[in-house]
Length: 189
Length: 139
Image (cartoon, rainbow over all chains, first blue to last red; front, side, top):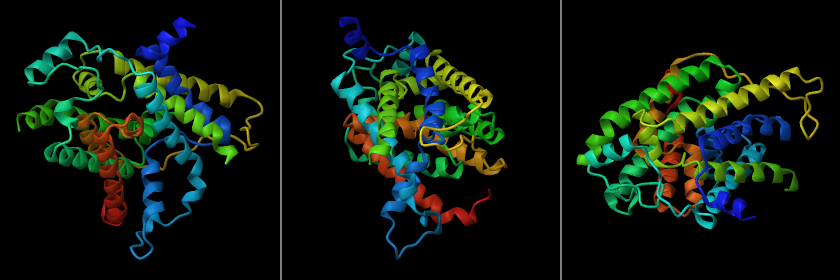
């Protein structure tokens, strides 16, 4: 029992987390012949809230058919609550030495318990403007590419789909540009 | 509503794993894009391997029925490359900057992060913007 509790509080190694994430693909197919993916819910949420007088074609469909998917992300948020609040890991993220040194070089403090840095997520006009703008990139990009890490990297590559490989190349390219060039530049500002 | 319970539970597991594996951590994403640890690559590769293996098993099974009695079909993505690469690139820029992709956004919102909620608000506006501009974009 104590071991189980310790496991619930501790961070999980990749060889536990990865297979569990991968199992979402057959699980969704088994439950109701559904394709595992997260970002389509952003579209459904827009469709729910779209006022009829605006009427963007892309959001005119019966979102109720996708209730299953919305339930999945409500679950995801609940899971986040259990893992991040109820069974919160008391230890800071255990980064590699190289990553710790990089943070120091960027003038960032080391992780101190939160999964995200205070420097970027602390409530301030600058931080929230930046988070919002990056959110716009994520929302726009995932819909343009018709999928995100779950729909393309996990589901798409698991089912050997070429379009998903193109998407991954784009995603990783964008991530490298952001992480190597934009993040250090952004931190200076 | 009861028929949606399995999806809700699967979502809870997914969100739990995203936080416990620190895939929802900005620090881990920077570490990944700088190739400073195997952790995130381990998650992605083992997830894809597990998915691939399960799909092959499903394909080889005789009766391929879901719990609600449908025939299991593995959906095909529409062909092309422009929208996949361009969209991926834009999404990747956002992911590399704030270290959150859509799954982790929802998981982190659940932890009560106000910042993650702002990212979600931005993502919804970005999605709407795509919908409004769709016919003017190359696909």
